Image (cartoon, rainbow over all chains, first blue to last red; front, side, top):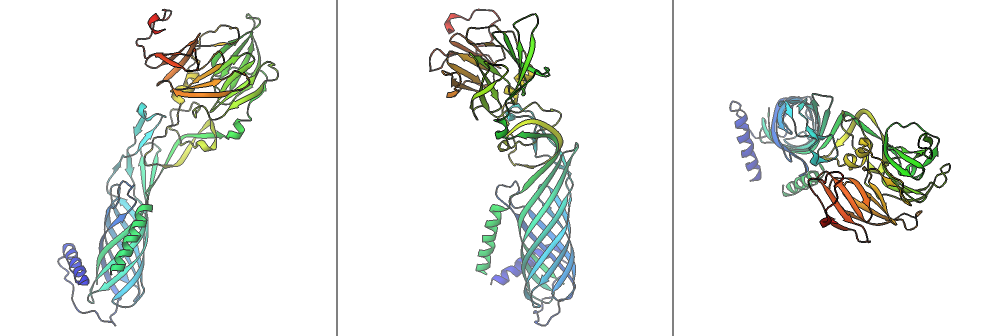
Length: 203
Length: 299
């Protein structure tokens, strides 16, 4: 029952993403090969402390890659995320599947760079004096410049057919974002987030 | 499956409470140069006469003039021959802004401390007592073209600034309240000192004075708080009490048993005839014209 619900949800998401590629619903075979092209499209949240300004921003990613071997895959990912603004992560995705079967845990590592889609960021006040009530401060307008990301994690792949499966993953994301003001003021933001994702995989 | 959901929930909970975003700012700013508290309390010394570079408060006592070198110490001028004053010594007191003298004891602030110095022999000035951590944390003047770097008060007092690239954590609620540069330090910078007169046992400070002596009591006022010290034994400084005396206090003047505190908005007047300092009236506005008698109603 639970698997069916997951399948239903996954198909719904998949259909939104692409109507043209209907999965070939064949029963998965134990001896099937996992080599060749694949696509993973997932959605999720980047969960942080409630003290953060953005507690759980949305993340959407799609990865196109190739199984280097039955258990090892490499791909190039692209996505959109909403941290302190809109960003487009471009990254390399490496996955190692523990089992060569339709149901397998896996370990993953994403490394790349998030490109800034929004330009301005001006949420930080800089006080030049000692007394806030003096009003002796300025608001600095920064330009977002993007930044590096690294995202190790682990998850579970469950293939419902030879060509279609669902993926759950949990990971840790370190995302550094760089902001530059008109003067020599710079701002580095380090986001440390727990990443929870659900996605679909098809080949 | 339920176990998996439970573990995911557990991990989310742990990460949710520990995954705090961190912000770091990098800028060219005034970076503090510290003197440790231990060094501060060993720093008072006496040297030969020095040139006046950034003079502040001036204080007359008998045949001597004491001139504060802002945040550095005190010049001692022998004024026995008023036509030919002689600069005879310099007393190093880091963070000094104000002074008061009773008998042979000179009271001075030294950043967060108040010290008592025996000046009976001006060739051999001795520290006789000190009350530590009694005044608010103060900082020296800085280059206002650049922002201030964060100050770690546990490292000591700020004796200087160095303009350089600063990299520091940025708190979510970033409004460093460093204290008293607007009132405590800048007053010394502004100068505005008037003349004084010699007194019997107690010298009289200029109009910018924030130290004052009445009888056996030393008063020190910062921006808000009046600190009252007992000096029954002049070489023993004993903090008696402190209380909030108003806002934006800039000057103190003691006339007999009445204390006048000049603030940015007016004047507050206190009766200091007894141990219990009483507020008589205050925030008079407009200020009384110079030279006009204080109305009897408020005396």
